[in-house]
Amino acid sequence: MKYNFDELVERRGTDSVKVDGVKFFFGRDDLMPLWVADMDFRTPPFVLEAVEQRNRKGVLGYTFAPREWKKSVVSWLNLRFGWEVEKPWIQNVPGVVPGMALALLCYTKPGDAVLIQPPVYHPFFEIVEHNGRLLRQNPLVFDGENYVVDFEDFEKKVKGCKVFLLCNPHNPGGRVWSKTELAKMAEICARNHVLVFSDEIHADMYHKPYLHTPFASVSSLAAENSVTFMSATKSFNMPALALAYTVIPNEKVRGQLLSFLDGLHLSFGNSYAFEALMAAYTEVGRDWLEQMLSYVYATMDFMQHYFETEIPLIRMVRPQTSFLVWLDCRALGFSQSDLRSLFEEDAHLALNDGTMFGKEGCGFMRMNVAAPRVRIEEALLRLKGAVDKRFPKGVR
Ligand SMILES: Cc1ncc(COP(=O)(O)O)c(C=O)c1O
Image (cartoon, rainbow, N blue to C red; front, side, top):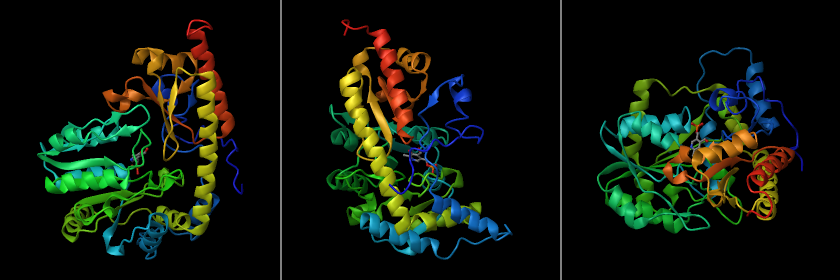
């Protein structure tokens, strides 16, 4: 490997939410942080270099978005997903979550209903409820292996909604939705006049043989009736730069959002972030991404074997994308607070409590494995010790 993903990078003292935030969010600072979805790997050198180059120009005055940034996006989406988009369809926003919140304010009114599919990334709940919109839920169904959509319930719940927030691919379940599933959701939403927001922040990180399909690419119905949210920040470990973008093929739908954003004077964006995106969306970037993904994949192979042989009461739901592992801990038979205490008090690990993603996450925990392998090995050793203490040999 050209890049060293085993390197232990010191993140303490950098105002890192994941590392320095443990004390604030967990009330103690002796836990190994395996929660917030960024990587403990060094941000790629070509991204850091692009930021430094921008800095070396010496003046940080008002700056346009570089003319070339949309060209980088167009070519990346084409090479990575075979998705042909046009430059005018693309608009920068200050992050996927802020972008979706802004779009909700643009396309809906207070009291309008918005559909989500829990268990799902927790800000999906927050941006709806905090902005006075009504949450409707079409829970995903765990079929023992993976999450699938309950289409009968979807048909019922989507009626009367203004927007459907799709997590594509899905976090925390790690599902890469198939073209058939996406096309079916697209058809139902179009028929019911429900606009689809497709959060595709994890899109780049599919694990072969899975292949990400941009929602808007599955059919013309999907293209005409959707707003896609993408970003380079998740796949290249640079969320501090706060840049995402929307892709909206439909001119009318696009015009509405652009005019709303114009009124908020948000279009300048962050110069460093554009430079970083352009450095990442390249051949060199693709090579780093593939190496990072094979490192994470090998970590997950190791984990899967470890859980099966050493901690069989916890089942790892193997993600089809990205670096977030959903752990099915239901066989332990613990209440959620007991489960948290197993991870925090006994194993000294900071994971995301499954119920953050909705009540369907009860009995689950989410583990971020984008970290040097020794850390993951240490975490599993601690977890095994904690489980063995609760279930001494012979009791299982
Ligand atoms: C599904 C999903 N959407 C959005 C985000 C955050 O996006 P941003 O940092 O661009 O607001 C995350 C981060 O974990 C995520 O998992």
